[in-house]
Amino acid sequence: MKIKRRGFFGTVAGGVVLSALSAKGVAKGAKKEKLVLSPPVAMAPRDTGIEFVWQVSRLCRSWIELKTSDGIKTFSEDGWGFVPQGEKRVRIRLDGLKPGTTYQYRAVTESMEKKKEQPVERIESEWRTFKTLNPKAKSTQFVVWNDTHNFKKTIKLLDEKTPAADFFVWNGDANRNIWNLEKDIPSVLLHPAKTDFTAKRPLFFSFGNHDARGAYGFKVQDYVAMPEGKPYYAFRSGPVAAVVLDTGEDKADAHPSFKGRVNFDALRQEQVEWFRKTVLTTPEFRNAPYRVMFCHIPLRWKTERGPNFSRSCRKAWQEMLIEWKLQVVVSGHTHFAVALEANKKYPYAQFIGGGPHLNDGTWIVGKANSRKLQLTAHYLADKPPITMSFPPLSRG
Image (cartoon, rainbow, N blue to C red; front, side, top):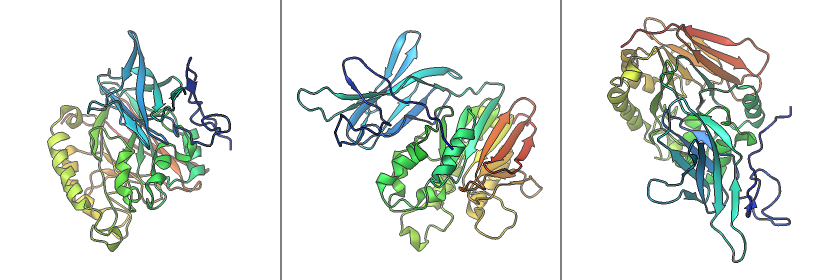
């Protein structure tokens, strides 16, 4: 199937402007790798900002330009007094924006390897758009992928079929298996299957157990942006209050395969303390009509046996989630789509997406308004969708 993709790069007068996705080199006959290797990936949207991350091949400096009523506004400071720079990726955080507002932007990248009497190699993306979150909107739409495992055909088809949305949760296991080399990370996370996958839906990344595996699992955090710099966070989009928690690995921290690399038990407890101080005390989260949690490993499964849910996370989190009146946990991990209704023991539903193969791959669409929150898991294959609906909650 032929996948249509947007072009990314335009022209500029008086400089050398190159297509980041062109098969050609820096100049005719040159063998140097292209400077920019991915489109600017829109991540960690907020009501007052967003962050962009993109892959580069060598040392460069970068900035974001916004079109405003007062002209072009440039974001070019990294919080430490430097213009954002990098050799493998660059990232730029935008703050001070207006909620629920659509902005036009472009990403500019300039090589720092200027040779004498040659123009600076400069790449400008095309003018693109993003929209900040709106906590006061009457409705919202979001989408979810999970367990793509770098299956390129699946990712391309998901990108084609998944609609535009206020936000997009990539709910873990973007990685095929383990990260053996750092150089494998950016193309998987920033340009999966060569798609421009955040062009119409800004991304929230949720860590899966395979995203933490391997000698370079600790480097993933360099390539994904988080709203507050942690792998757990909360946000509000219209009537939906959402929490993203990191379930860590599906094996004990002491498992020999980790070689002493992980300490997820401490992270699980850290998230409890943060949740109680933040989610349970903030009115826009505590009083939201709909309350949803995203995490990679489910907290529930059909039985109490097997590796399809995290008993340790459920033990650590269930009390606080019930206190919050959580309605549904949205997860992946099992490679098998299923919907488990709330019951007396577990007063929250569990909604799980499918796997990485074309036969079981799914994209989830969530729609919320004053009447209901509806979740629908759509299959890539010719199978009937799975749907759950939830009424709005009272305040508090």
